Image 1 (cartoon, rainbow, N blue to C red):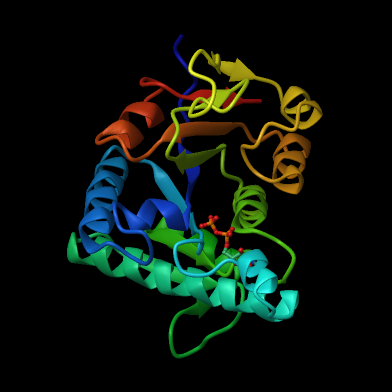
Image 2 (cartoon, rainbow, N blue to C red):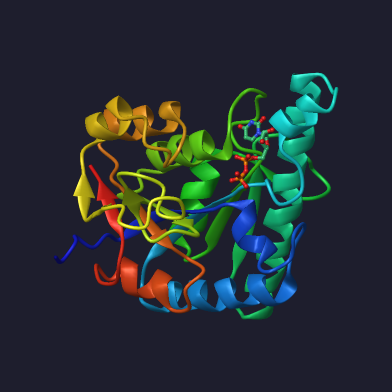
Length: 237
Ligand code: UDP
């Protein structure tokens, strides 16, 4: 099946993706590999926003389970996303792509604050804009941040790069003959509680008519293929 192609997209990179084969943290070789694919995406003429997660460094919910107050732990998680954003920015700039990091938590010495109109200007000038710190509030995730920024920046689709090649009716790591959907509706995803993104992110995409394309970003070359409407993925719309 050929999927639609888009001009302005938002790429959600979870922290797990940046960790590569390591059990924790940022793997420079993996960041470089993903960045090289992002360069190809730019060269193909796409306008690109990126939202980075932080789960490779710190997750609020895990911190809370160990005794930190949830809100404080979530702020720690948001700071982790800023570290990831700087890593992605640095490698992209080494490859000659102009970027800006905008954080939902202002951090003047490190990056720009999130200003929608300024982000718009960066995109018009051909820069990649990397959004950090999710929505800037605890009790949210960077998936919600991705959905929100995609809506604000009028992205035509949200590409969720994960370690599975789409949406299945059961966990393919547990159920060997699980079925992968080529396409699935927002309402089915919500009704069946399929674990693609959190429900608030999915609802925001549904309400703003932003399709979500779920694909395996760990597979070399897949980002470019899937953006071109090829390769294995599931489109949620
Ligand atoms: N976080 C938050 N508010 C947000 C986005 C993120 O509190 O708007 C915190 C939350 O603790 C989360 C952590 O930052 O666990 C890292 O983000 P996330 O788990 O979404 O990263 P990913 O799973 O994509 O690596």
